Amino acid sequence: MGQYDIKIANKTVRVVVCDSAVSVSSCIDNGLIPKLAKESPVVGLDLHSSKNGRGGRSTNSLLVLCIDDYCLVVQLKHVDEIPDNLRRLLADEKICFVGVDVDWKLSRGIPSPLSPLVCKTAVELSHLAARIRKEPSLLNGDTKAVAKKVDMAKEVGISDEPADSDGSHDPRDYYEAKVFSGDELEALVFSDKEVKALAIGAYVCYNIGRTLVEELLRDSSAPV
Image (tube, rainbow, N blue to C red; front, side):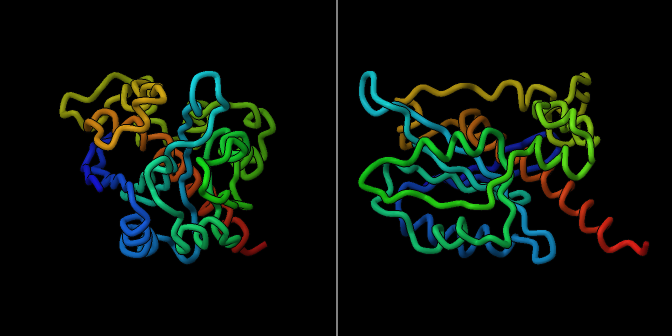
């Protein structure tokens, strides 16, 4: 298990990379669950894939879950089993799991002999934004377009604005997230820059998704 404190935009985010079922289970109980909001339970979700051998089909090597300033990276190629509390978390239909291309990513499956992960409440970030903001044009919008629409581009490090002199905002945070090769994804140790690249997608989806869900809850509770 590796633990990293990385800077995304102006926030320090704790990222824990786990390669065993025991460490994954502990991080869920002691890291993710305590941060899960009771009124607007949202989790940022991302998956990174690699191919099974030369010319093989792609399967997910890494699962990333993010809540607030805490991200868990599960190394699916190294864990001996999927802990029960991870399965329960993903299967909890009261939680909104927000990501990009989530249906496609989940359909890639995970390495055998691990049994498949089930997540019925995974939501596409752009679709969530389109429904809550009632703007069909966002259905096909990319992450940058959604971030701009909810006025969060600078906050999550996805803005076109120049970097601040104090380093509190760097628009390269999101755009420098590298594409990993299969061998890189199966490494046991990552650099700080690689960890940021692995976690930032789920981090961005959590923050924008939480803002949208809270907006929906405020609107639904407002007097008519």
